[in-house]
Length: 288
Image (cartoon, rainbow, N blue to C red; front, side, top):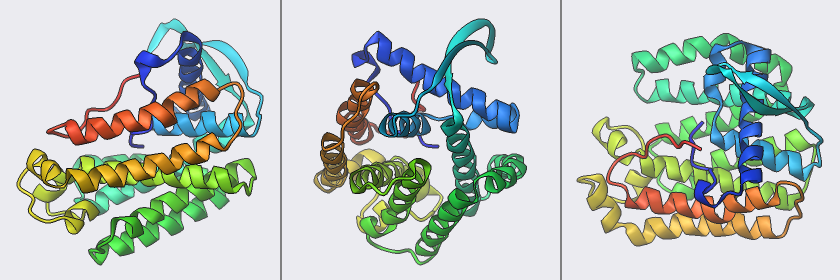
């Protein structure tokens, strides 16, 4: 969806890197199997983190295999799969469609409308496969849209919609009621929303679109000037969210993917904060 929840690649061990790629390829392959080739473009790093986290948390066993990559048919890659992947893939399609709908609501560009149209039939199938997830996502995106229409001031209040959505989805996917898992996902979800808002400030300002960061802090001229003027507040907003996520993570027990997830939660989120506040333009899509 966004690509803000990623590991620090330079500090990943070979085994963890292979595991991460296997989960990424597992989502991509499962998407192709369930929904066809085109929806595979929705595969993203945020969902890879969610998949790794939920598999390890729920002690789900995965099957590893060597399969050919659609982008490079001559090359074989390690892929992992199980039944939980199917639910995660359906959830990703639901999220991707709602993100496309949100993009259309923002400015309705031709490309964004084309993406929404392409995803619509796949959204319907995903909603039939996983109606509980569809209900959560529809409700929270609906609340978010209403707050945006009202030009709501208060970043925490607006970000809560996305954060609650991720919390509820994680608990639904694992069948858990664990408060620590819920809080971890809540804060990761909040981080994604806030990071995206900060990353989009220049584009949103130019196109006069709603952005809770621009509503909260005035005096925008350009990205660098704005971030420099409000660096203290933005740093606190991001750091406090990341610190709460780390606190929740540290209270939980993980096994096979603990080092990989520690890299993402402890290092990856903080590294992304530095990138966001240090860049003079929108961040490019990450490559792992």
